[in-house]
Image (tube, rainbow, N blue to C red; front, side, top):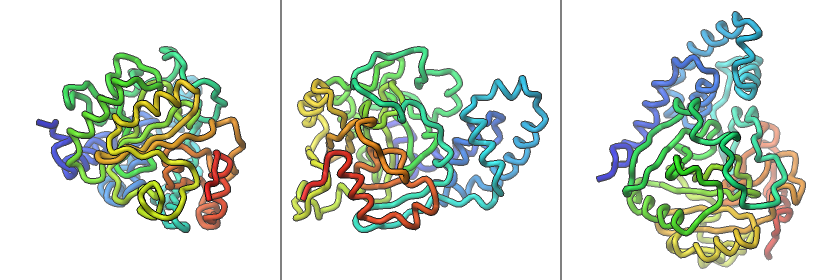
Length: 344
């Protein structure tokens, strides 16, 4: 029997919101940022949390203003810079995440993501395999315990589901399989088998999907993790117009499709052994695998922080309202060319 959070889509969303609400009075700046970023990602989450967040923002701001410098230095620099950026605007004027169609592409703007600090996602990556480094950021760090939405067993597999601190998908979390094994962001066949088992167990959740960035494809943490979400709409790569879905139009990058993620393993293994970066989108009944150029092998455009799995699958994040308003389908397609397309 699935854990309560996985018993239904309603239960998952209800616990997702309730656990965020439980965090609205936390004194940690980083936790406040996480709750706020998740709140503005969905109107129903924002309406449930907005009053508590507004009140706590004022209290937290006053507390930080009273802290001596030696105490301020104990707060992670990334968190402090984001909070300072928030303090420079009218908190109640902070807009919710918005989205629209731009040709066949989805365009998204979340104001909090523009404050997101880079980890190693802005670094040039030359090797897909890198050994796990206990001294680098990873998902077993004690300070991340407050960011855990749920942990337990599903399909007899130990899992940890954390909130995404800067979400860009519906009910977005980070799924770490067997976190205590400290596996790097490099897949083995048994990992794919377990992903298949997890998806089979949770396939009744409407809109469930998992996504994966290899190193070099904008994975920001070298601790094996998958992006989990419950999406209200399909990603553009899933649309029926494309040849990989029996349509007549070519997707700008080559897409390999499989009915089950376990069927994709031989090609995933081939990409990894050939040091080719890739992104995955996995649904219970279909898997999309896309090979692409590594970050650092091309110069991405100013309006993007780089194409990770969401952009590769057709949902484009922008970091300014101006870019959100002015970006064209042609500009998006030109970016795909930099990654190894364009197929005609």
